[in-house]
Structure formats: C-alpha cells, structure tokens
Length: 126
Image (cartoon, rainbow, N blue to C red; front, side, top):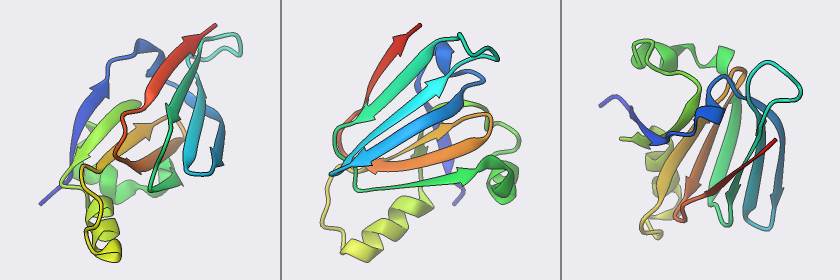
C-alpha cells in the first residue's frame, strides 16, 4: 500500500520553507526553518521533546516517493499513514513502542522524517 500524506500543521510559514539548522541531543530534536525567500523572513521552530528516530534526505533523492505521491508532495508538515519507515522501525524493535507517529517535514531542499509518540511544539518568530 502506498504511503499517504495527511497535512499535520496548517502553518503558512512552512510554505516554501528551508531548513536552516537542527539540533539533536538526548532524544530531543529541534528544527529551525526560515520561510519565504528572504533572510529576514519568519523563523519557525519545530521541537520534539522526545523522538525514537529521524532521518534527513535531500528531496532531489526521493524521486520514487515523489512519483508515488502523484506530485501532491509539497513543502509542509505531514503525518505519514501506512509508513514504510515506521513499519521498518517497529520490525527492528519488536513493536515495543505504542502510539508512535511518522511525521514528515518537507522543505524546498530537504525532507525530514521523524518517529515520535509526543506531538511537537511549533513556534514562529520574526
């Protein structure tokens, strides 16, 4: 079954966003994005207090995924249903974690996949 993207956050500031920085420490993941084309645009911080796994991939290397989404994949924040990444992770750990969700943040240049059971916090600054 093909993965399905369900929009998670309707934050306009994530449209045409770029990953500026990220920090991972002791299970916590913080993503800093800038929106729009200007350096002076809004900064969006997405903070996961605890994650199980994450991966970052250049969007240009995800041609098969883009084809499977029929061109519907665009910049934004999604929950991935029927996730192959989550299925793989659960196979690796023997399905010991309940309530895990596959979040995907798609930017102009990068796709960040995150497996977490805690909803992230999102803050915007200018």
